[in-house]
Image (cartoon, rainbow, N blue to C red):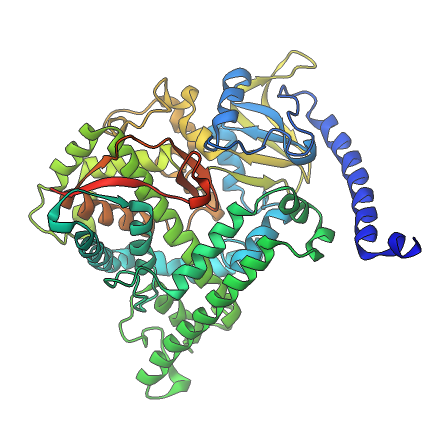
Length: 539
């Protein structure tokens, strides 16, 4: 019996109970600061109101709350922890533009750092400023123009793979999640041929390991994952998520180190004197990693503007997950939407077919107004990352464009005071579709809205790209948004002018499931992972 009382499991359990008591006391203290905001009571003792529901896409439950309480209200998270939630564009713009004043909570940092390492996606404060300053030139508009031919080349390689599956040019049922992912992964290949688009290859070791990381996050999400995120003491317990993530991440790191070594060798092989390497000594390599290594090895760059090998490795993992995952998600969800309304697909095909040049420049792609409208609308309606959580790093006052009622005094509040440590959730998908901001058709997929005057209420979003929160804004805005837009447009340009896409019959019961990004899945077939089976035929 004495052994049982002192066993590691019981020690951890006892410590956890103490933590839960302290956490409950903290909740009571924080709740007192939110009691002037209206909001929903907790629907579950552990998950609060953020409990995942099978077959329901992110933002669905919150959408009803926004209709009931307005743009700003109080909600309950894990263990009924209260948080301030808003789709008010002025409030969101304030929080995002003061990004270093509103960092990610520590438990969110731990989750992403365990996946990607301490790259630009995870780093905060001065470390983030430094990394972003080094990486940013690789995503300049001039660099994206140079990368556009690569995007188109990979798109046509994808067509060759699709054609191999179209036996005798007959209509075939193809999973576009799998096929598009092969293309976007090869695009992000850092100037290295990953082979994902080689006929018969199907994938690569790096792609498989990356997919394992993503699947481990969604398939093993549950109570223990939440406890480990919230309470570090639980992280000493082995879990399937931790095991699978570590195994896959080791593969990614090993292959990433090989890519870095190869790139460095290219630099030194071209330099007559290794002590006099210049920023342009990469041999014309225009891929992301080559551009970043220029600032890492060059002697004419201060040490403070260079990345260590560990930081370089973290950027590789970050670019893979944040790059290929998000672009792949946007393209597949766009294809789904174009199958839901084939008139939109036909109109888009008509426009992209007007270009005689099968390999247009970035400027020519951007001149295709309906393609631009479809991409903007897809990113608005189906943001790959449907939400983000921030924590006040200091006391502050958040302004509102739409006043909210103080339920204790009855007065209308035009700003919300927040204390250091309080959390603010930004539901990107709800802001992007809120009818008070976008009008009564805000939840619809309607590219034509971008060819007309937008509602004046969207102007409160300030500097956000296209008045939406998909790429965030401020110092933590998506550093690769130009890359993503050019890649998405290039791939859609090639696919839509080459193929016709339709839903299979009977149409599966699709919904969008949250993993690292929001992906299409079929109700009742979740164990098969993300999928989008479509009928595909050459035009």
